[in-house]
Image (tube, rainbow, N blue to C red; front, side, top):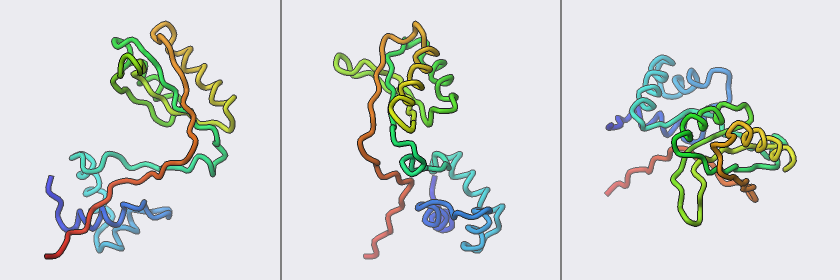
Length: 163
């Protein structure tokens, strides 16, 4: 999909985040000289075309008191991983869940689910809930704890160089 000048301005205006106001798309519209409807339609088109994957909040879990952050990893039977992944991803305490290929023989895990807690005991309790849901379809699992915050950024456009 080719981006026109307005699409580029919209992406540039949102690449550092949406305005923290009650009507962020109306604010963007005003800034860009568009209607709110036009902004929403363009955002929907950019999303449906794959230019934008999603619009979501990216909270700082540490500031929210969630200082134990664990990526649970699971070796799930291939025939069940899609269905079970959907179920795990819908748990209220799982922030994201996805399937990845194994890297045998070193890495047997194919299902990943991120959980956060105020301490490691809370993360372990949530991990046990996931293990119960997986049941016999899981041949093993582990948890990898975060040791630092990684900078989260969304789409960034490079400015065109003028010759």
